[in-house]
Structure formats: structure tokens, C-alpha cells
Amino acid sequence: MKSQTQEKNHPKDRPSSRSADAEELREFAELVQDAHGYEWIAFADARCVDEFFTVFFKLYDDAREIGGARLAAIGAVAADRLRAHHYHVDLTSRDAAALSKDFRGEQNVENVKILLVRPKNWAGTTGAELTKMGAIVDEALVPSC
Image 1: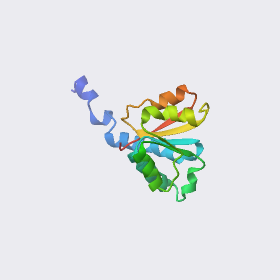
Image 2: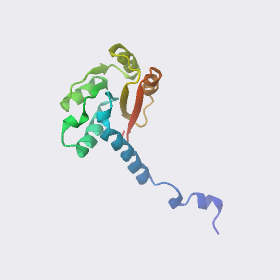
Image 3: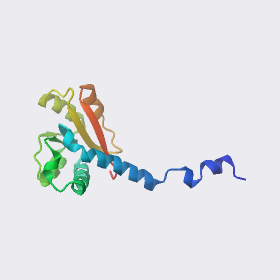
Image 4: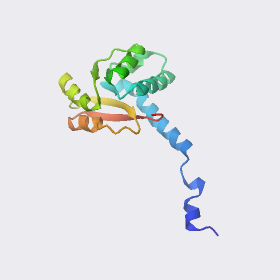
């Protein structure tokens, strides 16, 4: 007879890290796929840029599929990485704390759809700050960061 502890800890009763990773990747890919529906796509760092476009070009074979989204980068390295992918950077902030202020200076973000591409373990509050300003923010959590 199994104890309650053994029953709770049975491997088939816990989600495997492989299925959790697959779910995270699926959620990330869905947001990448819908990137053309956002007015802004903001990237938290250079690794996020690389992961976003790795998935993007698995889904699309034409860079124009990104639509009319304007691109923002947190930090010069992320901005340089966007340029390396042959995209124009519309807004560069020195750090995550400055991004919401820089958006405020760029335009009224009330009801503006923004996709924030960030590492899943990121401690930044940028998404919440933009939401307080009235923006509609989705956060694409990069599974490998």
C-alpha cells in the first residue's frame, strides 16, 4: 500500500519539465504569431530579440508579416540586435525603469496594444507601469531566458 506522500509524488501526477517547457514555448509562439496585431513590440534585452525572431521566422518567411508594429528596445545592445535583424528601432530606453517614461514622451499609450518580450524570470515592473498608463500590455515570456 502506498502512503499519501508517495501518491502525491508519483511522477505521472506531476507535470514534467518537458511538458511545462513545451507549454511555455507554445504560449510564446502564439504571441509571436500575433505580433502583427500590436502597435508596439518592446524587447527587454538582446536575447529576447534573438528568441523572438527565431520563432518568428519559423512561422513566417516574410519579415513584413510583423505588420506596422513600432519597435522599442531596452538598452543599446537590444537596439543593436534589432538593427542586425534589419529592423528600425523607434524607441530606445536606457533601462527598464525608463521605458514607461519614454513611452509617455513618445505618445499617449492609453488603449495602445503593446507586446513586451521579456525573460520569464525578469523582475522589471514595466508591464504593470504601462498598464497603469492605460496601455493594453501582453507579456511574451521568453522560455529560454
